[in-house]
Amino acid sequence: MTFYNNQMEYRVTLNTELNLFVVFDKRDENHFATGKTIEEAVQELSKQV
Image (tube, rainbow, N blue to C red):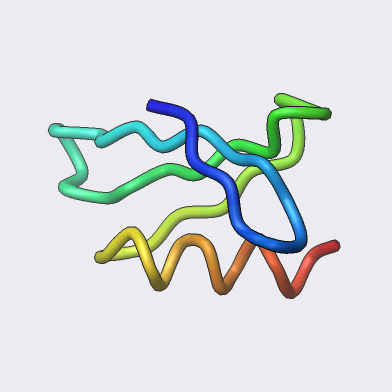
C-alpha cells in the first residue's frame, strides 16, 4: 500500500516473520525503517530524512 503525508510518500509492508511493519520511501527503496506499529515505522523514517 502507498500512503502520503505532507512531507513524504511511502509504502508499507508487514514482515510476518518478525512481526514488524516496514516503511519504504517511494523515491528511494533503499531508504526504509521498521517499527512495531505503522506510526512508529513512519516516525523512524521521518527521522532519517
